[in-house]
Length: 241
Length: 195
Image (cartoon, rainbow over the protein chains, first blue to last red):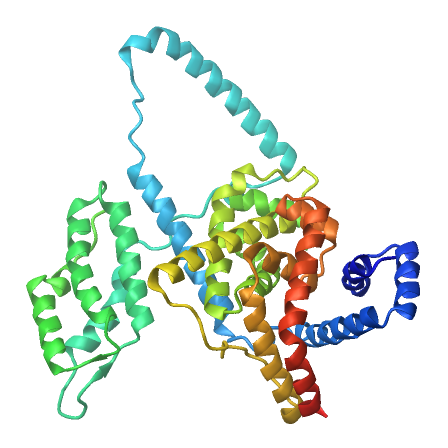
């Protein structure tokens, strides 16, 4: 065996990717070649170090919140995409008088066939309707308002004599902001008034979510914005059904 | 997770059920994060790749066939590899554009070491090795990570990356030669320190 070939095989020897005959050939060559022996010991030392390093898992000392935070980001992104596709989907034309003659019997046949299929499938698979249907929207406007209220109350009731700053949970504020955006996309056609109110509210939330501490000047500005946009008046209104 | 329950979860996730998708995330997150971390040597980047993989996979679920030979974990692993490759390419392009080449050794390596002295030397060495792994060309780095950290066979790597076994062997050989060339002196120093 030549040196060049032997040196290539040294690496695969460590990874256990050599056939028995190749192993024997390499062993024989190493016994007689001192240069390749040196190469072998160098690769061995690197390989052992790499093994020792890779045995220490990078997962062992991760922040415990990483998995949860990653999941939240994934969930948010997926929901955002779902809402976006829902909102941008063009309304289908259900009734077309020109094709009425052809389409009506076709629809009837398809409806009957799908009803028949649906019944047989649900009977045979044993799934209940509830487990098969997609999850409903996570937040209604009412729920959203309940989430939002404590943050706004904290800001408006703040007394500046004792402390100079209010500490804000930025993540919470950003989440509220994102939820408002999602809800707005959803409500845009159903309830334009509520959607417009949410748009106003987002200006206030944006201001809150971009700072860790809120000082006196910013607080005054936010309070003014809350008053101008009539956030509390809207929050106490029952949402339209 | 049994085969049946996985199939059912995929079916549910296809219908938009995010709880089912979360269970699939829980089952596969560590493997994908480890792959992404070894490729990027950076926790934040690995986190981005993990998230991107699960978002992409969710939207591609309709194309996944439960009855085919490929298992879900293989399928999502393949998506993760491709996402990581794209991510590394984009990152390289961004770095070139901003002329922000990393000249220092990476400081981010997060082990929990109970033995201070020996582990300190090993940790320093690992950071340097990590630095040189990062210098490998993308194809060689991926091959090296898949072989060394993920312990896939050459055949598996070839099918995952869509190349021949010969080219995988060549990449692996070149990456180890590169590491040998650069780490020769470092290793003898580290051995002295560890003694």
